[in-house]
Image 1: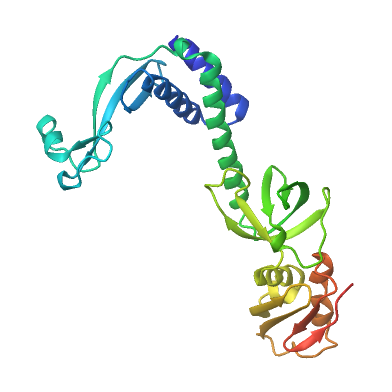
Image 2: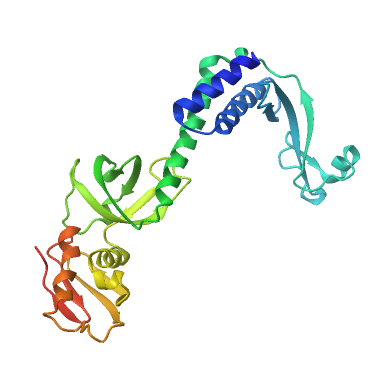
Length: 285
């Protein structure tokens, strides 16, 4: 059976392109869950699989808690003074363990075990995809509206899905499945069961990032955006500092002002009056 365990771990790791330790951890969780059902009490069970041999050991464990706190979960906790009777150097939050008979892998049902393993692997795969995306350090996400979910929009970019809530759209803006959309990455929630990235098209930061992407003088360090304020879909203002005396940011006819309109067209923030240094820039569309 130990050989079968190693073969299963290797196959799932290859299939899902995740580390073998992720699959081992999933299998340990499946065995622990099955073993727990053998106890009448709400026991805390830990299973360890040897990564080389595939053999596994099972332990019941108790968490060490302060004497004055008392036992909140008697089946899973032990007071400090009792713990030190068994292990003299026991400390609070340590675990005391004792071996218990191990359940055979075949007895828990291959299908049930595989379901637990696959869920753990899917979670790890999703975490890995999210990490790969975040490592790129991007603040703006460009993707396609994949589907609607409770009135909100699920945007897909590569293998990553993000949530664009309806209240984060520009007023009167309509999106349909298949539309391309660009939005600011406002929040990352790793605990969410659905999309872990939340997008916004109304945040002032969205406007600032668009200008940084579209205006070369900002990328070159000749100009710096200090602040932005928006009434999404109506008007917007940005505060900019020029570090090159040759650039006159207040000139309404300057090439910079012309380029500054470009973010509006690029991001569909159209029909919006934009002010740059107090001078109004007409909308692109």
